[in-house]
Amino acid sequence: MQHDHQLRAAARAIYETVYPGEEWPPINFEEAERFGTVHYRNAVAAAQNALAQLRNDPARQMILI
Image 1 (cartoon, rainbow, N blue to C red):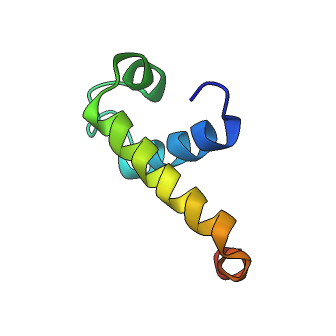
Image 2 (cartoon, rainbow, N blue to C red):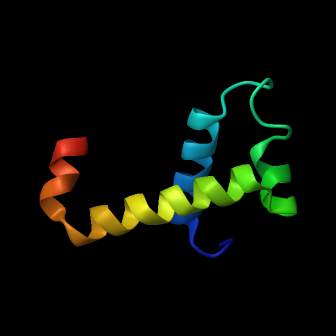
């Protein structure tokens, strides 16, 4: 995922939104990415789903803007 900057940025945004502050995830995004935690994998899966929807349906992009 290091080469797909858009996917990584989306996963980071989801991770930091879903797991705000230090009380939610056990570690920050970079560490979660390095260790492949369940929190990280869930954020990546959500980012992949979101990006696929946005790329396949241009009309949906306008709804989110």
